[in-house]
Length: 362
Image 1 (cartoon, rainbow, N blue to C red):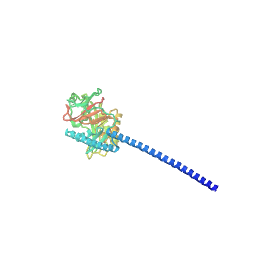
Image 2 (image 1 turned 60 degrees about the horizontal axis):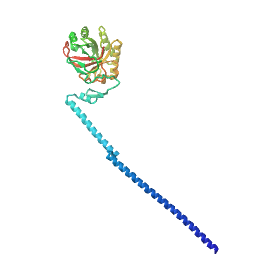
Image 3 (image 1 turned 90 degrees about the vertical axis):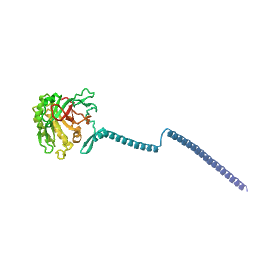
Image 4 (image 1 turned 135 degrees about the vertical axis):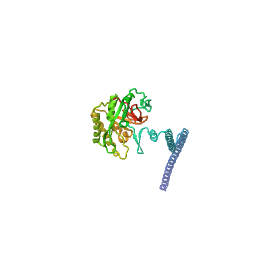
């Protein structure tokens, strides 16, 4: 019986111990749950404060004129469309005003592309970037004006620029009274030695060459000479130069010996299939031989010559005689002689004559 009582007391003690442990465990769980709940409440309150702060910041930004990314993209697209419309209207207005002022289509197009040379040929327009690798002449649009005598005069500020007045002549001017030409103040003359035919390629000496070079030199006018080339290759370039050298040998040639490179503008022209490389090779052969013979080489051409027929940078080693009628000169690169008119008048010459100015001392 005593053993039984003792067992009962032991069982009661064990149960009490288990109950205490359970109570302690449940208390710990409750405490952890309470702590976690408190942490969640604190975190939630913090998030609400951050959300409120962000909301207030966005409202402030909106009040200051800031936009969301979507709004910004929309505004950019609207601005681009407005700019395109404004640019288009500006270009249209510029074109309209120039055409109404009487400017031609080519001149109008050129004004819209100031960083390129625009060349019209055979119903097409060609665009050539203006290169910094070639020396520019540096003259402004207002630096040259036509004087009372019909010649261009320099009115710019560069005291180193000195302009001389000249003409270029061939058999088309007929018999010339060179004394009257000299008395008219002409400083120099380029005289055509000859030409090669545009179709058959026949070599010809100008009918008036001898009379012109004698008349000019005897009246104190400095002379240069030129040959209208239609050479296809190196051999023909040498043939043309030989005619020049044979004919100028007795005379004092102060100004350059010139190869005239122009498009024949004919469906049957023998040069129609020539490439820029072909033209440049002809020029190099001719001009290098001129230099070797002791004369000054020069290339004559218009804007088309120095863009479509040749690359200006590839003939930059020689003197340049540019043909462009009117002012300002539509040619950005350096030049030595400018043929500015084909309808000039000079005492001693019947009819029209080409007028030139020279800015290089020879």
